[in-house]
Image 1 (spheres, one colour):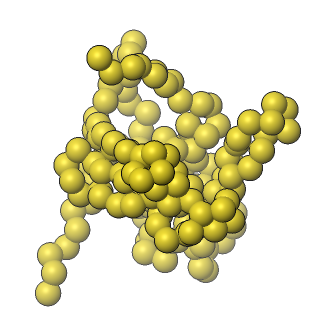
Image 2: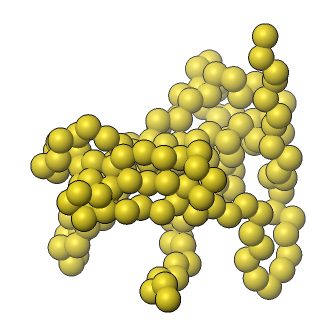
Length: 165
């Protein structure tokens, strides 16, 4: 028999007041280019703690061999997991069972019609069998305002780009 999972000790309240970002967790993933010297086509992604260590490949739809994970899959997994966690916290606060909840994230990679560059489009579909939509919809909105991935998608994320010395 396995040990039960420990639920995160995170507040769903917006209880932080401060003048700057206050990190709770930080991770680093480094991507190298591999044989093609191209992170998307033949790269390798490794986390600083070694837990994540996988090959990156272009999907067949973009001309690759499709034999590895691609960045859109990783982003979809992170987004779905984060939104699921936020919705689970909100459901528990309302004394609802989050066990039947599932979140499917579809990430589409395509062209931006404004400038011809690349753009991602994200669709989340929440499965929550037997929940009344009048109960679920406000909770989805609360989870949306709580989930950092959803906030990033809606508001943007501060990003710095620095050349290592």
